[in-house]
Image (cartoon, rainbow, N blue to C red; front, side):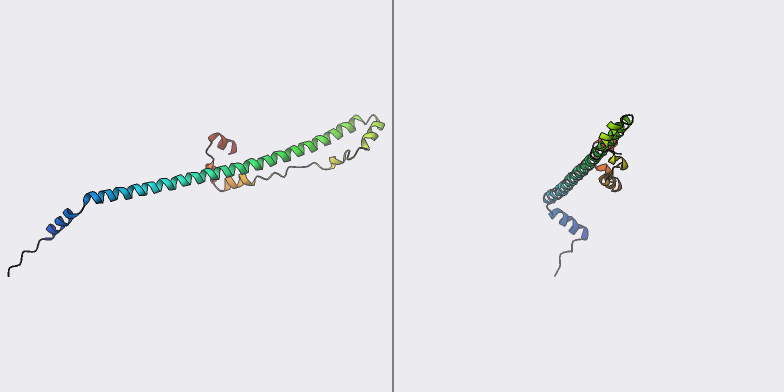
Length: 148
């Protein structure tokens, strides 16, 4: 019995490549590539949203912190203004003892002069923003210039 000659490896490889559905493989490759690109875009979009949320939270904390600091300073200014008013009244009344005696009977007259308050300002949100390296989360260049 005469057996048919065995095809060479090159012939078998050529026949295997011809039998493939190259159009189907190309479509699958395109779908997979588009899926990966779409996943990257969605991931990048999520990161941008998180960065915007982080920026908003830091700016809200800074605003609240500096608002409290402004109120502290206004209270100290009012306190110092009352002390200065008491001093002015005392100096104006030094030539008029009866007037000075009348002022001295007022509640807390001159008592505030013993304590000159200071502002216990705490800038923890700003320090956290600086130390975390997240200062670049602030996108507005003019605001970033004001802060740094």
